[in-house]
Length: 192
Image: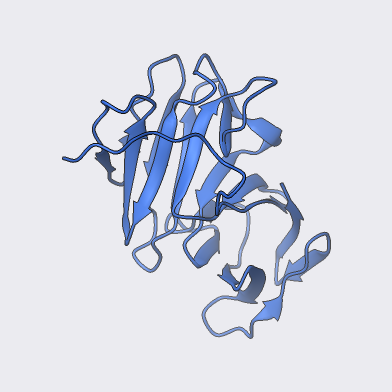
């Protein structure tokens, strides 16, 4: 295992964030980039992903290398830890956050919280986007909408979102602030 120096989010960070609201399903924070910071919620927190918990403002960072995700704690002496599907993120405190990779077809991962803790901005989950995101009722979907009867695929290309119905649908541009209906799924995307 190698050790990397911790860095707090800087203005030059390559992380982009959006909120996706899905009718009847909930809200999700979509985070892009190969490295994002994680921390507790405070008035001065500048972490990319904030949790309402007894965590430090900067608890560490999640890094993606190819298809793999790694955790690096806040201290430069913390070793880099490989995160696999279902792995709890090793952050001391009362909140338990896990990383999931529900689909073999996408390197996108999902962060979820157990118990009474919540993500900032009233979202139900955080999606670490790597090009393609699956939405629908199946357990292989990144955003699982159990009451939906259809699936949608979201893709991020050149900082622009596109959406289509299932594998065979045609891609349509997904504009920020506009409600999009893809079969039985109604969604609205906004900047976070």
